[in-house]
Length: 245
Picture 1: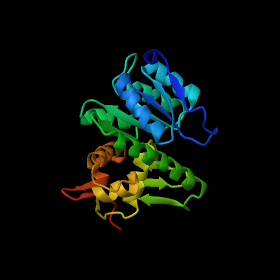
Picture 2: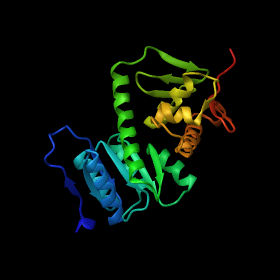
Picture 3: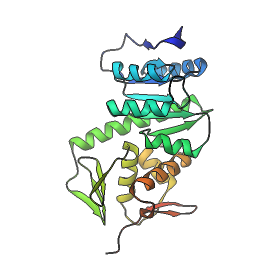
Picture 4: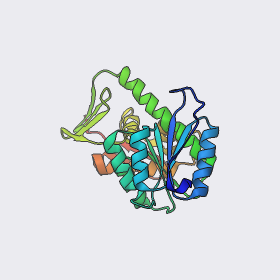
């Protein structure tokens, strides 16, 4: 039965022509719905239904992205995320049944790139998968054609070429999404960027349905670079604070 092993679909594809998505979810109905939608979008899909199987599948199959449920048998999605990210960086879209901000922040802290709360539409899930993969491609392109120099804003240092951030000369580990969010804010220091602007620039979303996602990533970013560095303008958005000249 599918519940006890991983499955692989899409053998007719030309090798390397399709992106691989590992779907980790213990609810058979949800697994099938997500897999069917992603296959219809042109992805190769493999599934796992518990923590240990997910880690094994990620190591053996080397997916381009993981759709990962938080609540899993064996060990949970947060532990899966930790172990997989220790092997190699891979974009992770986490799914949770609870609309719990603590869960979101913990997930973002262990390397997840985005969050969706059940129930969700398959259309939105597919859109977010495309967005995360486009971001990885943009990051690879940026690394190949890096901007010159390092941006220094007081004790905050952003190295575009290496996609590294330092605070007081100490390295700060950011997820790809957090790095892109910081770069977006740093592109116009002190200027207030609305949540809608940030969604469009960082997530490529054309609508304002993901403002909660922005807020969660801002909170995670504040914990890493210092809460005082990002100012909230209530009802509008956020600004990156910089030392006075």
